[in-house]
Length: 630
Image (cartoon, rainbow, N blue to C red):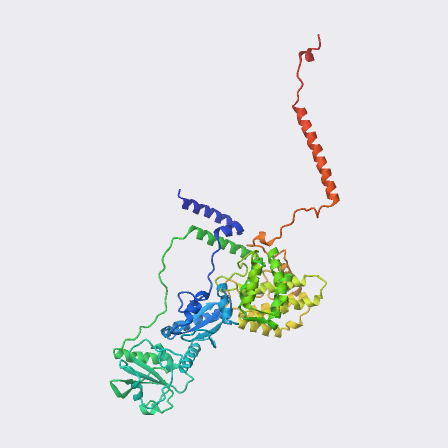
């Protein structure tokens, strides 16, 4: 039997065992590894150039073309909704690539944190234009819109602005306006290989159809396309009355003017009419582009280790699903790790209100979040360090947390479980932050220290509001939350229980707004929490009114530290080992009892030995013992 076959059979046996329990040990995870998750909203099949920190400046700076970069965050719902538009724009502008290229970088990836901080990205998605031969700076901020036609017009206006500032390139079409009444001057500035000039007449500069046409047909030889607003009455000279309209001038017949008649006065129809004219005059035009319907993939025999790994992941996911509304320590720690090591370090400067928000956030983590010994020490030292500063920048903050992390295992787990999405970009961090703040409100409410109990209603909510306002990367999400918080009277909340219910109601309101949204995970629908199936006592009747006391009881039960699931947690890093007995903990009574037990054990051993020896001894038999003495 071959070694591969033996390994495969052993793998299958392990899988069958895992299918029964659904729990993976830390050893098995270290041995077989984790299934790497895809990251990002774009891939190689899109026309969007995917950038990473290592090649960003090489691909964007000192280029002979402009680049428009989308800085996005893959977990941001608004970025997810914007991604299809950005992909469609890249596909639509593919012929413009010698002039401008469409790119994107995912700021959710830790490797890209430095670039996103350097370019002062404070909200997602953000668009930046980098002109040709760009050497330094953070780019030109581009206003984003939410449909392809308006985005295309925005791109043209940005290129037109660069052209007017002489920041274009020789291969660019002329993006200015022709303002002469004499068409003869056009030919004087053109090379001899240009056979036809197309003049697009526009009513005003509110439309960009002429320059779009010039960019669409950039790669066709022997033609030149110009745009005019007809401020010099060129239309009267050429007898062109409609707007928009296209006039064709020929080098071989400069006295004649051909007027094109597109079916509709829009970009696509005008381009078609120009292409029909060119084909009829034996000038080659580019073929129509078609959307890809798929492509052949090379078949590979699956690796048995990879099969095992995938099946183990599926077993873990089944276990998570079976636990229902359970809160996972893995999600709590993953949310904290992302916020501290990736989101906060993206800030350029952290001072004044933003510093206060950071201090409050770390303070409640250190005070209320259950972590392993190293994790708790990490949060306590970070809290103390931040209380001592008056300002700090993102780069120094990152250096601080990396230094504090050295030599210790801060986090006992590194993946999403309850917050894991069905595909990359769904759930994850936003879900983790909601879970974290729900958890903190419960811990604050259940903390029966001598502090003012009414202050506990504000302690967590203030930290949450400050963090989302100043650090949460999705700007639209942050604005929505702030508006909702003001409407729901967040600053009027008193008492820990009221804070728990306020946040619960606010979260349900957000779920209602986002139900059916593009950012919704199809396998985790946004529904009213808790559902009737999970907590029937939380409702007076099915579909009826809430039983608020029961809701409060249910939330407290879920977030009770003893009920938080430690699935996938490395317990050796999470549970603090109990110390062995030491001289400091042994009392005089303990010592006397030990001496007594030692003496008793010695006596029992001595008696046992005597009994064994006695049992082994047998008296020798003599005849007179039987017959008596003679």
